[in-house]
Image (cartoon, rainbow, N blue to C red):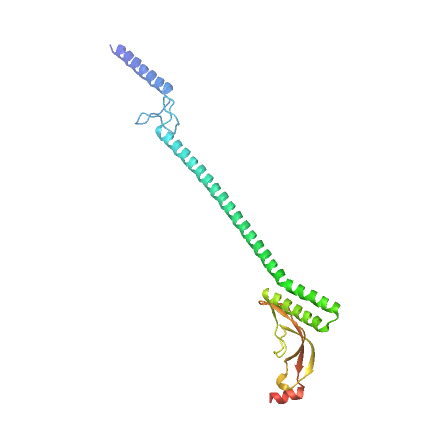
Length: 219
């Protein structure tokens, strides 16, 4: 009896070991509590993607689509801004050109009376009338100065003014009273300025007191 029982126990243990070994060999997956395969897998048992994977892909696609739309809108705005900038620049250039042409035409129109006076002076010289010639030359000079004034050109004050090296060019000097020392006494050619810009200095004569007289005046 004991031998039979021992044989049966041995057979039972052998069957349990075979069953455990068969399970370990054939079932290689680890199953979690929810019944899903462990680890990050993109597909379930039926070959379908999990819902969270689909949601992530949809979110990614939506973000990429939004980025494309934003880039397209940016390019559209940039191109529009570039066109508007180019149009504004062209409009300003046209306005500047038109203003320059208008100012040039006005200046030339102002010189036409000067040309008329020059022709009259020539006619007077041909006729031998000195008075008519002089009158024509005076009219020519007056008309030319008027044209310069209309263009914003002004003469530099010289005779009677204090010598200013920024405005005057001293050609020579002449002895004068101490109180007139450094005063412009004569003008050889008129200077002109346009606004703050000096076109040319006036060429002048400057009065100088002798050293002794200047010292007495200072005392």
